[in-house]
Image (cartoon, rainbow, N blue to C red; front, side, top):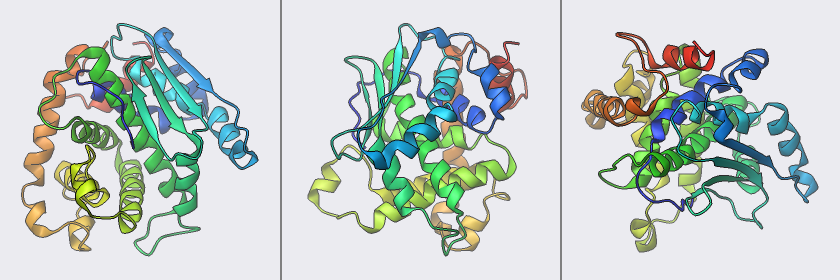
Length: 289
């Protein structure tokens, strides 16, 4: 996905909150959408001209997907307004953050492509239709929100910004508990693996600011395994993650967690208490406590 952004901003703060709200009940989400700081969030659902996208438009508005993202990002101290927009993109399968007008755009075409490749029931690897839809959408929105936060909060980035945005999104997804974390990780991994099958490996790909889909797949799988070897042990047992890579995944996860704590947490309106899980801290903030 194209990302029009400059370095600097708190990606991980807003990202974590998205996962929390996506797992919430509608009534709870209605309360969370009014969390402190969301006055700087603007949401726009552009009605599609193409009839095939009408179901996506109705479903995302009904579930208040962009509002949920905004409630999360609003947990960070934003210096200016940030706009989220769902729109048609003239056939382009894309999502991006544009620093010139401080907006995150998600294209109907990209969401439709996720629906198209999702298994009708379950994939051979056991990924459900539901997980194959929710996982990629959550990952993409968290990734682009990360770019926005990097820019707006001017958080320093060492390395490629695209990789940093992926790490923030993955870290956020992994804050979900139990089966929820497995569901969104499996869905996101399925999307990376599926797109990777048709991705040409050439010089242009190596020069791109984004990693190859298979690289993103293995990076996500490694962080998942590193976060909880028991919960995500099946990734190694079933051969999805090579044992050689898995040996150091605990250190990779700890590195991301350390960076989040140092670079993102200071920008949050609420900070985790001693020994408190980040998810619980975000839920407490969203309730205004």
